[in-house]
Image (cartoon, rainbow, N blue to C red; front, side):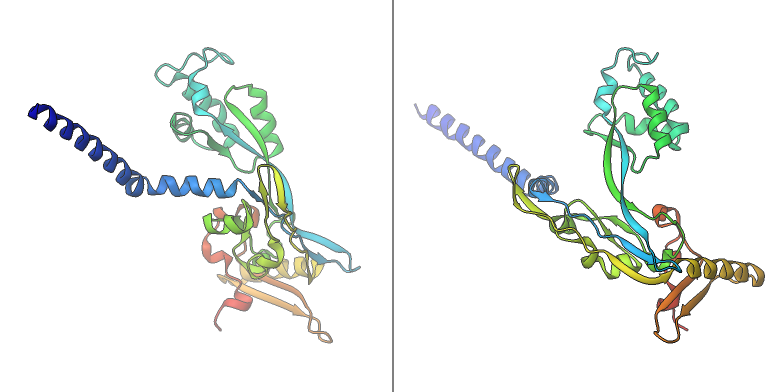
Length: 297
């Protein structure tokens, strides 16, 4: 009887240790996973706000959008689906990576990524999906759709768009995706990082709404539009003149400010080197500095 008693104690002790081990594992080793899950639960009830537009004027005082919101196609792939394909578009079953390699070779010239990099994404079976193109052009979307590849999907995403590209880029700044804390407040949106976009971010960003099981508790509030005194023609001419002067004298940078004498309104603020806020990641971070107001003279 005594050995049975100790056997029972041993079994319960073992079960207790397993339970404690699992609790410790959840508390410490899976902290990141749980925090992400908690964040997803919080985000499920957030209604993103629409960012306000930024306007400048022309010589006739017409309002011109220089920063607005535009729907871009997002292209992504579900890696697991590729591995389940027997034949699609002439590709063989995924044996030894043949299918993913063939996919990558088809996608590479359209997307612009290397075949090897794309193949790595396509082979990530543990991932629910892999992003292929964040802001796809109409041509890219059409070409990839024409490939008729299973496992590749398209979704519209609203993102910031600067129709005049480099024009007044230092003054406008740009936006980038919200981090976890910002997403709690604003939703899954893009927030200002430099220039006007950053300085007036709260004004432009609006306020996220709240929903519960599909029921709207609080509506999201659209951000306010911002109207600048910048004159498009004077701004464009200032940037053109500045570019020529820098090239002529071999300067590394330069600035031009045009101000209306009677009112003090800023009509132009040009800086070189500039950048394209639609594709800011391709430029050196020092290009984002608005030397007209941020540099030390």
